[in-house]
Length: 509
Image 1: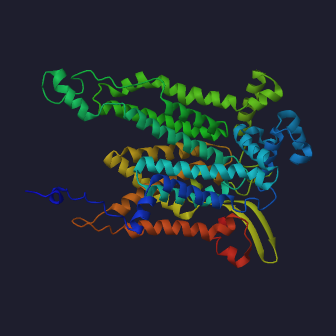
Image 2 (image 1 turned 90 degrees about the vertical axis):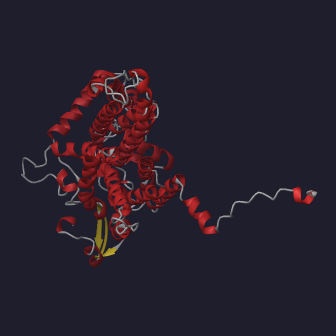
Image 3 (image 1 turned 45 degrees about the horizontal axis):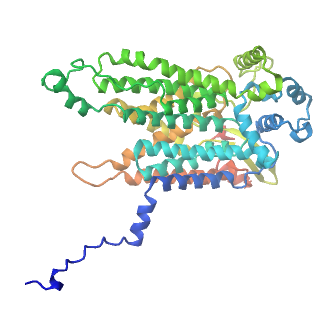
């Protein structure tokens, strides 16, 4: 007979306590930690000593003053001292930057409203949006790869990419375009996930098939009617259209983002119907999706664009005809702007760079220069060689993976880069390297895709990953190059010799 003591059940085993290192590893290996970490890195780099140099650099002479004018400040406070500047203020309530839409200038104005009309005030919005772009890219990487490690890697590469860094520290428009386009594609990916979760999977269709087709096995494409959900209003698609509209309302080059979103949406909808066995999937996609795509990627951006001129309508009145004439004047300006001066037959600017030169880093652009007593202070808008030149390998590799494995992630990267980049080859107006700013996050994405596959490649019959050190080395080199070029990105004083070590090619001077 059991005694009371022997009837007592043994205590349940307690879970083993995690070691300190393991607890730290698990805490770090979380998406939110990776995203916040790269956001912190990007923010520290972009906001540190943001007010230096204290004078306007390059096109800040336009946009910082436009923002000040939008706020209604005086000519003295806005430093609109020349007769041309005062003419444009009276005629357009702007500077010569009236040839671009107003949303980016309003973003700059918010910084000036909050922090004053000094260098920090007119640059703080760029720094905030540049930091936010890094966070958005990290979220895109997490959505695509589901790995905090690669989320951190992608964010780190963009946080330390030279061109994105410089554009985040000057009062110009391209960093805002980059943010809105990246955000638009993040929302587009969320829309894809949203609709995929509401669509039947192939296994669900196969289970239903025999019941509908008399038990004849897996259904043929037209063996039974398949109706996929095709709601008119998809919340993430609406958000994507708004974000891409904001890109266009900042600079017309944001239209390239809309081109990419329309192409991807159409491709994904056709694929969704093919996978479900819908007969005539291309026609069905056109039938069900053409109207909502037109509404949310054409009509919604148009509404956002017009709304960005609210300040103009308040100032000049609700004269829609005058507004249309303004749009025509803007188009006429860009159409007739020539790279070669017809009088002198020389380039209108020493730092022109056609689109094909961007990825080669053929001609960076000098924003600021002060020389004296063998000391140079310069700000060069140049790209990180690891990212740009690495993309020359990464993009063809990603395209090959898309063709070989029909990997939709690879397709997303290729289509996005193509939509953002290829239209620039058709543009006849003068082009500069900093126009590539919105493309850079997706060049980083291509590099991350290639690095991930490289790091995970195995030798046949072995668990070793021989290419992992090469992938890690690329990241180290990329960050190292950013640190090496940091003085010429921030106007840090350099001797002539130290500067020459960073001017690798004659076109970099």
